Image (cartoon, rainbow, N blue to C red):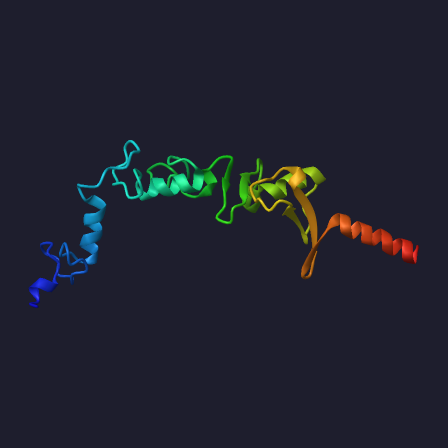
Length: 178
């Protein structure tokens, strides 16, 4: 095989071939794939990308998967829009599957909080203390109804229900008196 046949067929590109069918290097093949004229455009209006997953480009497909709407989300890369979760309003689902909500009047770390902790704090009328955590009874991290939440107190290393600890405390007081 000659040296010329092992190089990319794109003019002025001297990288080695990675895709033998098209005779392109990895970089030129990536460009060809993104801009290939035979691929359908993304169905979202004003999107210039080609569809990769069904009829959506990868960016809109990821937003559909994460937020349930291909136009939702922080607008990463759009001119005039700030990036990150700070400009999202209301609520979103974390990578771990919990619901995070915007706390009105919150500052810094208290600006976005986990919804199940906020629901329990509102029920108790105070902030959760160190060592207290909130458990979902049915295991569904998105079900933040008060009936589905229990307050657990964690002493190293195991957690226990508050009701169980109160029953144990009453038993100790009855047994040893005071």
